[in-house]
Amino acid sequence: MARFIAIHNVPGITEDDFRDKLNAVRKWRPDRRTTILKVYGDLENGRLVSECEAVEQSHFEDWINLVGWPAESIHRVDMVCQVGNFWKL
Image 1 (cartoon, helix red, strand yellow):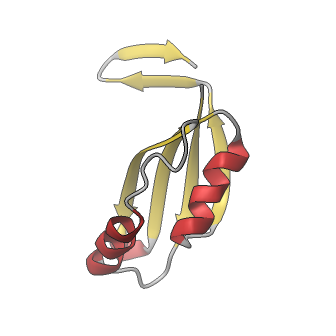
Image 2 (spheres, one colour):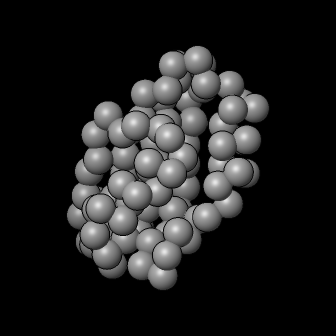
């Protein structure tokens, strides 16, 4: 399964907005082929990064449209390093 990250610019987002939007969606698996892994927030600067595993980028885009945070850019991830461990995707 492919992994993607999206960069979002959401000026004026608050912690309540962030929590409410994600609690309202509650679909971290919008379908069998898509899993939203994490959403990172720099709320002070209105920047979000969301991470997803999906068969196709379009499946991730469907979730992005559902939460209403337009993606400034979407990137396919091909290499990860986490806590000193590397793996290719």
